[in-house]
Image (cartoon, helix red, strand yellow):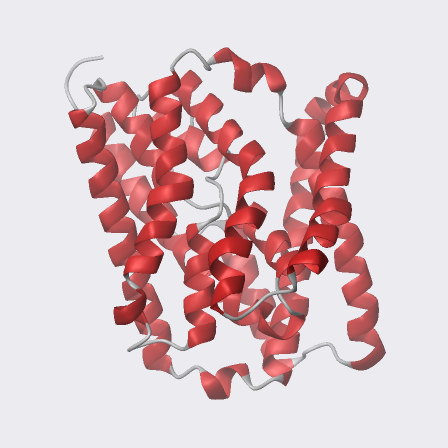
Length: 322
C-alpha cells in the first residue's frame, strides 16, 4: 500500500484552487441559481452512491468487537462535540461566532472511511475492525449528524428551522441513500468496476458545493470579515483539538485493555472527520450565506488530520513485533 505523504492531497489542492476561483470569479445572479440547483442534484447523486457503495457485510463482519466500535462512536459523536462545547468560551475570544459554528459542525461529523482504513493498514493496526468502525460511523452519521446539528449547532444561532432541516435531510440525503442501499445487490459489480469514475463524482460534488458556498460568502464579504490572524488561529485550534482527541483516544484504549492493533484503530477512526460527508451536509443543513464560513474549519482540519496521521502511522509501523 502506498505510504501517506506529509503533503497536501490532491483534493486539498483542488479545494484551494476552487476557493481562489470563487474569491476572484464568484458565481452570481442566474448562474448562481443554476449552480445551486445543480449542487442539490449532485448531493442526491453523491448520497445515492454512498448508499450503493456501503457494504452491509463489511459493517456486520466486525460487529462482534463491540467494545472497540462503541469506543470509536463515543469519540466521534459524543467526546468530540463535548470538546467543542467546552472550548466555546476560549474560542469565541479569537474567532467569530460563524467560525465557531463551523467548529461545532466539524465536531458532530462522522469519521472518514478510506483514510481511516488506509492509515490503520499502514500502522499495522486492526484493519477489519477499522473497516467496520469507519463504515458504521458513516452509516450512523447520516442520522446522528443532523440530529446533533439540531441539538447543539442550530441552537447556537445558524441553520434552517427544525422542520425545514428534517425535510431537506429526508429528500436530499436519506431517500437517495436508502435508494442506493436497495439497488446495491444489482449495481454493486458495476460500482466495483468503476471506482475511479465514482471517485470523480464524489470529488466533483464536493468541489461544486465549495465553489457555490464560497462564491456566496465572498459576495457577503468573507475576506473582509476574516483577517489573516483568524485563519492562523483556526489552524492552531484544529491542531489543539486533534491533539486532545488523539491523546484521549490513546489513553482510553490502554485503560480499556485494548491491544496495540486495536489502539491504532481507535486512534485513527476516532480522531478524524469526513470532508466528503461534511460538505454536502453543510449545504443541506445551513443557510446558504453561512455555508462558506461553516466549511472553512472543516477544510483546514481535513488537511491537518491527514498530515498528522501520516506521521503517526509511520511511527506505529516502525514498532517492533508483528
